Image (cartoon, rainbow, N blue to C red; front, side):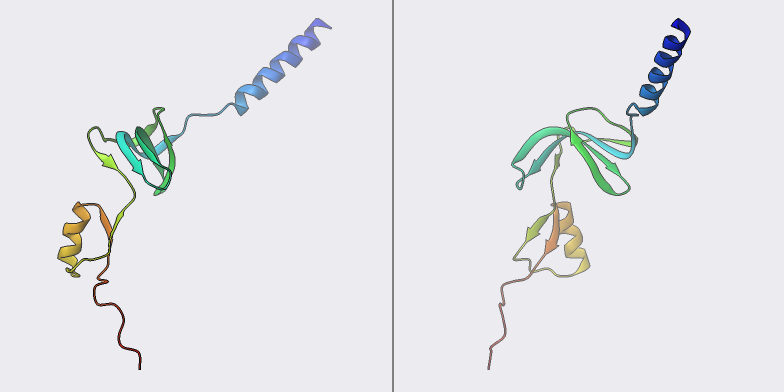
Amino acid sequence: MILKKQLLVLILITIISCNSKKEISYDIVIKNARVIDPETNTDKILNVAILKNKIAEISTKKFKGLKIIDGTGKILSPGFIDLHAHGQTNIENEYQAFDGVTTALELEVGIDTIS
């Protein structure tokens, strides 16, 4: 009887340990960046984990990754939209990308005359 109980306990421990959450190693981890997201009202020092070119997790906990980027002193946020950009060439778009602009629009002209 004791042997059966011990065997049952051993089986349960094996099942639990097999189902325990393994720590994921992400493709890219950006650590200690100031994450600003106006949509969620977030403005904190956080770690960002990226897996398969998508943000997988954002948290204060530490992540393991193939590539670790130290974001200390840097701001990490969604791309910015410039609604009044005069430069519409590739070189001007490259300059704006350095400022975090991911969408540059020239909305000054408006619409053509309707006849």
